[in-house]
Image 1 (cartoon, helix red, strand yellow):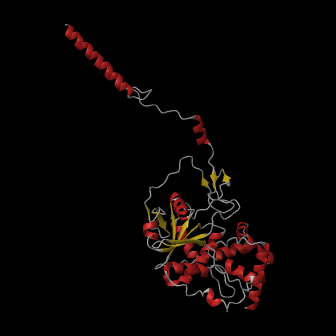
Image 2 (cartoon, rainbow, N blue to C red):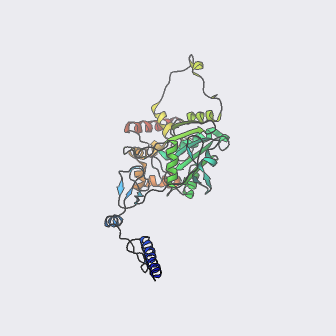
Image 3 (tube, helix red, strand yellow):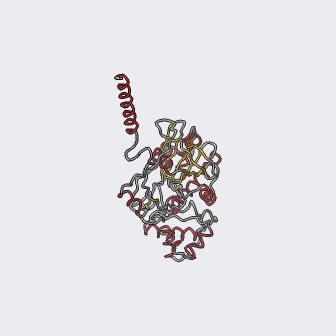
Length: 370
């Protein structure tokens, strides 16, 4: 009898123990017959979610808005501030000290490529950042690099490759980039690329092409051109607005050609002439010649022969200083030219008033001499 009672006591203790163990695994407030109840959200978080979204410019963070739109300084599309932590891509990093992320990009033709494996590895390259809606340096960068491309001739696409990567990928789709290449008559060997914004930021950071936002810089990014030979590990950064012959020479040297077009200092010691630099010619060559001629026909923009005779002086000053404002104001002449020349934006040249007048005087003098 005692033995039977002991068995019953042990069985009862075992049942109680199992019940306690199972109960300890159930979250607080849940029971066997209860469904989990939704957790109450923090009132502060709920209030934050109900707030109006905020938009800001990636290049000018001081520019903020409660509505979507464009940055009044650089024209970039305002980005909505995210309340979620930024996600990153798992990347395959190759070549040297983790310099080249092998992220996926998309060309202007819609082809998917990997940055290191398909574009950089074993090649001589020139890389720049741009965006198609830019009102400042980008149009001039592109036009001047077209000149460099022509100087390099059939080496393009065989011995050297140009890459232009948009910093506004949500707007610059492959179709938009394709249209941009047609406007500027981009030749072979030059690829325009878009992709995920986080991946493009990573590329810019690794290559040293990212720049800190500068409230005093209306463009929002520095017009840099990174030229390098991945096989040799030699890289240099230049201004994308530099002298086109200088840029072509540096790229040739990366390929391995001798600098045969440049005479040595020693050879010039006794024959070098005194430099006679005309300010107007310099301004025209560095700011205008990539898109215009004086008496040799249209290029990306119109032939400027006789322009000082057919246009009002004040209008000329404005089209040089603030062409985007004339378009926004729907000025009939500016709008007509914008439509005629494939809606290519003339960039703001950032010239002082004295330089604008010097440039106009040069155009007048050259037109009279043709």
